[in-house]
Length: 177
Image (cartoon, rainbow, N blue to C red; front, side):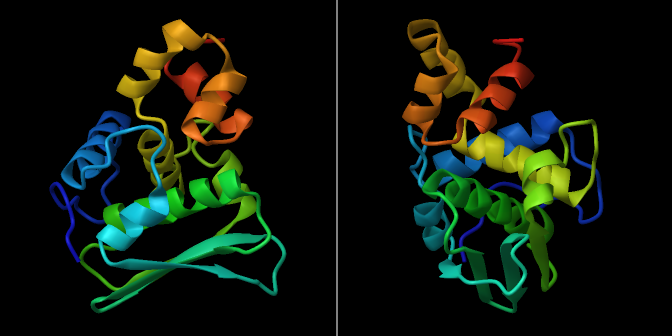
């Protein structure tokens, strides 16, 4: 598995700017710094297998597990494509930020992906959400596109993310209120 950038100390709280830089460098290291990002291709490049799954718990959206050299991501089979893309990016965040050294897993329900980190929460779920947003909607690429587009709907289409995710990202970058 080829990982990029420095390994963060597990359990340490990371700054948003560090996560932004890490996501951007990960894309650049794997020649994927373009629009739109395909998180499944990135996962495959770093040796993480991605599969659709039918979960017995309808609130589950995805999970990542690492055992030795084997890593896999499962995403809810019947989720919309843009939802799956964010889930894969979120689980990659766990993989690259929290599971580089030790084996483990993260099992994420829909609430983890939608709300964690939006109200100043910290910890692994917020960090994985920040990583996913930065990976799929790089701040520099957003700022390059925004002046010509000026529409969150169009930006969501360009970046292949949900309108909700794009609106949150644009707001966090100070481009809209």
